[in-house]
Image 1 (cartoon, rainbow, N blue to C red):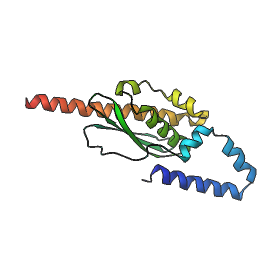
Image 2 (image 1 turned 90 degrees about the vertical axis):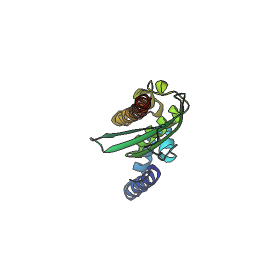
Image 3 (image 1 turned 180 degrees about the horizontal axis):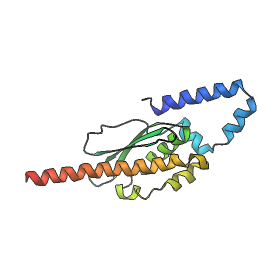
Length: 167
């Protein structure tokens, strides 16, 4: 799977090439249709990468949207107090999906696992000023956060059960 940055660069270059061959004014119109927050997180995504999914302190959420083909992996590293100390993502999808992932990883760092469950797709969509046709991208980000937290909680539950079984 391509990294988000490589994918973003390739898609961006391909789109610019197609639009450059057509009408120059079309490129300007399309560039202006996305809010600067989307463009910023798409061109400069934060926290791209991955962690060891087998580590006890890492929760992994892998979600996808079959309708458009976007796939988002979001990972969190949680300390002993239940606070998220690190977050990473890899997304295969459109610019709005990459931007939604990037924003999500920024927002969850430093918060408790319970606090991040309050982050809603509407918050991400409002921050990025996503157009209605791209709202599914913010829904993926919300789902990925929940999946990562649930995965981490499942690991902690199993570890607790294993410890009490051996006692």
